[in-house]
Amino acid sequence: MSKQVLFIANSLDNAFKFQSVLSMLNVEVSAGSTQQLRRLLAPGADVDLVIFEALEKAFDHLQEVITLTESRGCALLVITNETLVDKLGFPAGLSCDFIMRDAEQTECFVRARRLLGEDADDERPNTITVDDMTVNLDTYQVTIADEPVDFTYLEYALLAYLVQHPNHTFSRDVLLQNVWGFDCCVGSRTVDVHVRRVRSKLGPGLAEHIGTVRGVGYYWSS
Image (cartoon, rainbow, N blue to C red; front, side):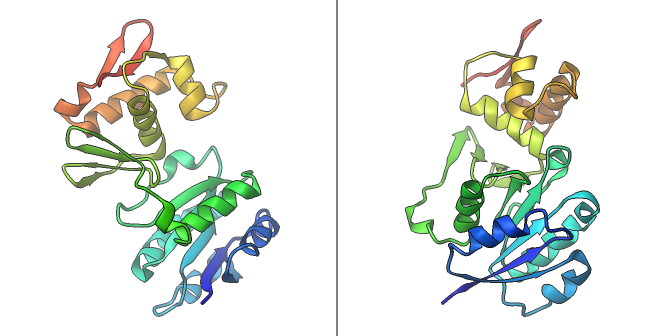
């Protein structure tokens, strides 16, 4: 039986790419704009995956899309860009992912296929556990003592990068390059601010794992 995919966008930027991607999956596709959100995701709507292009003014509708997809019990794939990615935030219980607007078709296919559960039997949880904290590298979520912690994407990405490379000190410039993906629009102070936020959200015990090397940068102690 075919699964149902709903593609919501206010432009044709990604429509043709995803038309090709979804044609390789056993799905039926419907499409609409943000003006049709409530009708497309009305109670009882048969939808397995929502692909939402959260670009420009459409980003203002993201929270409504999240609320509707969560209430319908379907998965969500968000298309975004570098300027908006730090504003993303997903509920802990939502099956979700995001992708950059210029992603290759192969990456789009893999992420959509995973959210549709077509390769669920082959997947293993991709998590890292430290004390009572679990970092889920697939869903971009963190729990402490089984309670979800509300990180922005860049706060999560910074934590995940440090946790995956324990006992290695990274300069601020290296962190900007590997976590932010660019180093021309923000300064090293941005790293310091995000480290403070991550430490605050981790709490006293876990925050001690993030060490500072004065004049150099930061590290995660295992």
